[in-house]
Length: 221
Image (cartoon, rainbow, N blue to C red; front, side):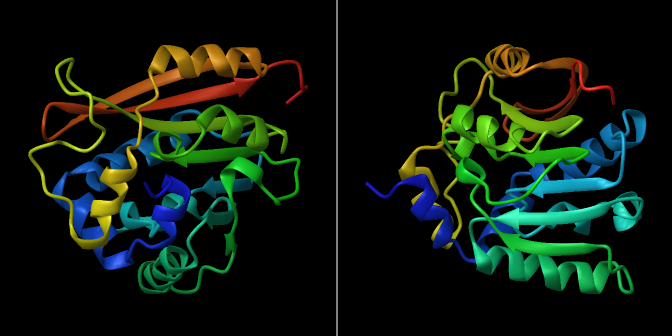
């Protein structure tokens, strides 16, 4: 079976966008992320959006919510990042305080310290504990994560009755695993971060997008 790491490298940007729009998650995330950043702002402008994919939520949110920040967008897939760069050029012309970097969240090559890290539906597709340890090594003052919660009778991250679009089929075959809210919070607590806020928004198939803000303890920020 193809690993999730390898599967993502083969996903076509158009298939990813089509799938995420169809399941309503890009739209929900476009409401959650700006609200989390507005209501619980980072301690400074240095922001990394890790595992950013194609940045599709920017089709549903005014990119102005990112303008206060100096943003690095990362993904393991250069093709997905290329689509993100095209989207930014179209949606936020003239905004230069950003860059796109191919990077692996499980073994990041970025340099810290950072003010904040954003993870939107990333942890389900990686060794999430390893990814957190790697990213927390960048010393972010805050970490913003959006995860998916399923109804109790649905174990699969991708709804079984929905046929994934094109190259997204290999993602379902590789078996993404949801990260329980409580487990994520326990792990973050062990890494020195306290849960600051939680926001929820329902999406199709009785699923919920859960936005979480974690704040670093004892770093004088």
